[in-house]
Image (cartoon, rainbow, N blue to C red; front, side, top):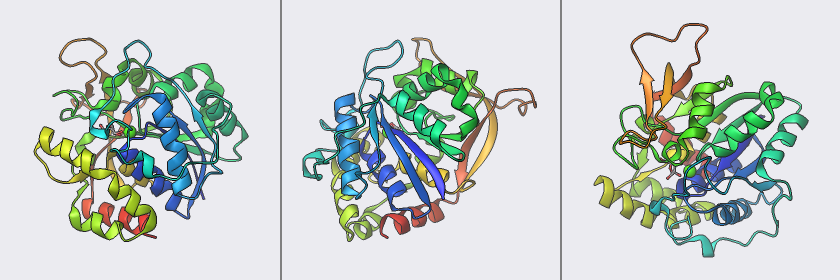
Length: 308
Ligand code: BDR
Ligand code: CA
């Protein structure tokens, strides 16, 4: 049984990611924590609660975390619509759970401390909560076997030419986690997620299932945004790919890289810069960056789990 915690900002692709963790019989989903990102913290928290209700997992504790980045204004992502779920949030079941009274950082700390074994923490929104956790409670680090993070783009960005959204929102937090900390990280950047898109046939098969039908109903607004912005007519499942890797370590092909995060306000703000000149030395901080995968196998795996 793989112990997982998800830190998230739902988010259409976050919804697929949460559903994937709930669908897998090999997962112990210990907690879900929320962060401001795609939309404000009230929406991301309500969406997380209702998505867990949709998946029949109202027992999973949910706690709200940072309502803004370290030192930058709140900046959302219009790809996810006014409610964060492509205008479909109202159609989800209303969770009977009220949310954990603790804040996200405390829930993360308590869950990790109480765990009988190592836990994989998956971050699929801005890294604000994770950076705060590691700074405030370094004693929990030995309980984290690795952080699996959807974020960054080595070859380029999505929200700007150079920056990926999750890093761009809170580059200072991302720098703490990816450069300054020493917890093992597998980074799942745009380089692999933009390739793992699915089309109408895949979504049609998913829509034959009760949870899948609701997930698919969240995608039209997001797809329209991608069509207008990137000229592509498919659905890119960024965050679900990070969860797939967390459940199946090694599913993605990784390369150890030294990273830097651009924390300036210039055109590179929020960029993840990889030093590919030489391999990291044994005493250097590196991150395992997923640059490649068997894309067809990945698509088939995610559909197989979500359509269970
Ligand atoms: C990331 O940003 C958000 O829009 C998505 O939910 C994903 O976590 C992709 O850049
Ligand atoms: Ca997200």
